[in-house]
Length: 118
Image (cartoon, rainbow, N blue to C red; front, top):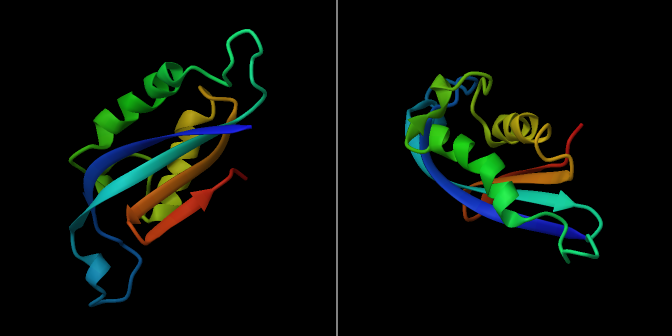
């Protein structure tokens, strides 16, 4: 079974590996949506895979770091594409959330990335 929680943060970025004149090479912002999906067996005594509070405790410090930031300034993200951001979140969260199954990053309602680990 899977559970997920959605988080939102506002951040700016500019893509560093685009052709000259590409609009995404300019600093611009998004309201990003992060979905963190966990997969596992339901604990029969508690009736859940994981307490959502535990999930929030793992994710919220990262949200606080990213909200209203410039992603290019964040260590480890590199060129801040949705793809690179998805891997960055995975690497940050997997040690704390062994049931992590999928990261979804949406940079707009119609564009995003799904990452399921290596």
